[in-house]
Amino acid sequence: MVLLLAAGCRSAEPPQPAQVSRLKEAGAWKGVGNRTIGFVSETGVFRINWSTRSVAPTDAGTFRLTVRSAISGRPIRVVADQAGNGTGSVDFVDDPRMYEFIVDSAGIDWSFNAEE
Image 1 (spheres, rainbow, N blue to C red):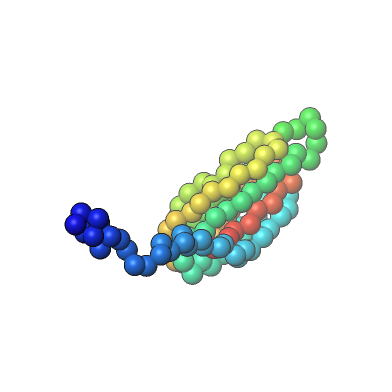
Image 2: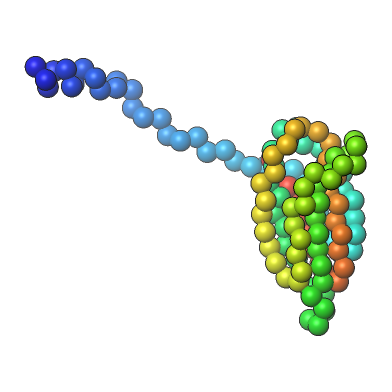
């Protein structure tokens, strides 16, 4: 009787595979020096991947990437603050809105992209 009760408690449906979300590139930028770049996020959730490479071997160079509100100009988050060569990735979560990426850089080649 115990076996019959245990068999009746089993789930009739097979387990569902875990859902995997795929990010799509929303924009990519590269350059040297300072720059302000407008960006609109429909979700407010995106990943920023960045990379830097020093221009001269004797100068480490600097790279700072800040996300700010394009409406108020309020800085929201510094996502990268790198001296010299490096790479990184940051997940960003906020409200859907217009943003600006503020690049403050000296003596370094930089690139970054945003994925939603």
